[in-house]
Image (cartoon, rainbow, N blue to C red; front, side, top):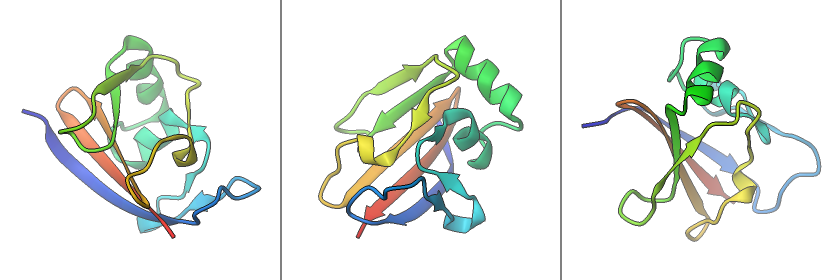
Length: 113
């Protein structure tokens, strides 16, 4: 059974900012439109960018949008995949993204204000 290792909450403006904006929740410094390998490293799912890129190329990384009861997992195999929370559908003003490598889960909850 997968085990959740991290939950991060971020507040974002309702509309997409003109420039890339660093997200600073818990001092992690995410970047809108940043590469997935950076996200996996900063969430603590991988120990290095090289490991994250290798896991992505191997097809070991999955991502889910929304609640686990309503959504399905999607494998990410492109190491250049960029993540921008504004690209995904929200429920109300909330977006939940969950990442999985093997049994390791990490969830990011975006609150749009």
